[in-house]
Image (tube, rainbow, N blue to C red; front, top):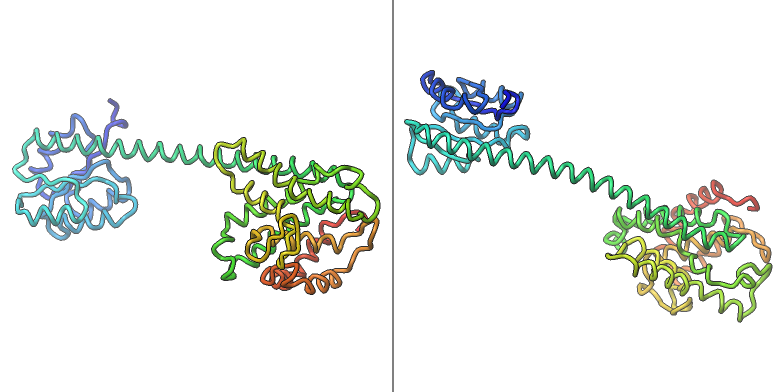
Length: 364
């Protein structure tokens, strides 16, 4: 075994004869470092932590107990095993040593076989701990890489699914991007409110942001003659287009069934797609959910989607100004919209305006 591969043992003792004996016994198997005082031991250990420390207790100046306390208080050396070497053999002395973090306690005069066996045991344990820690670090790196890959896959899946709806509707334009950014802005405003604090943690805000583009995925099931009609829908056609909420839910549920474990972003997307046309007073569709029975992300999307629809120009209507859109939505507080979310929308209405301007369609 090369010198670089050998475990390092720091011997701390103020008696020359003890150091000579210990270095002789350990020298053939381990790389030895020597300190004749507690202060010197700390300097060596902090600079380059050894694999094991053999520590005398009775030393002038700084005793072994104090050295051990300092070692365990330092993040660089707190995991280095310490074996006390001492002439003391009282139970209280041993108890104090273990309470300070020592792993073993060998009394003098030293028995070479006992010393070598206990040193070997602690070195083996320390090497196993280091190997496990290194393995865990490598696993963490792999998990991080895999997590990034899965996040990228999620984003690609969302974009691919959302594009299906976008290509079916020639008036969608940047609607998907705008509503996604509206949702993010709303979530950031709502997250500290008592009604939403426990739900809108940072992870959930990310999921809401990622899932928002799928809110109209169900439009893939609506016939072209209705979806692309250049004018207002009649009652029967409106009933048909309302089914896009059900088609959206079913599409996402089909994707969920292919997975071995639930995916939160798909759960959120399903809630948004199915319920974003529900109204606070229960007069919405497709199920007539009311109040807090409407999932929070869907309540948020109701605000984002309606605002964007109001400011957008359509073949059957002119675009409203930002001020007109906000005023119209305020009239729906407590009936169409969750009052808390509508209040939040009013607080950050200028952010909505900024998003709309930055991502406007060519015809807006």
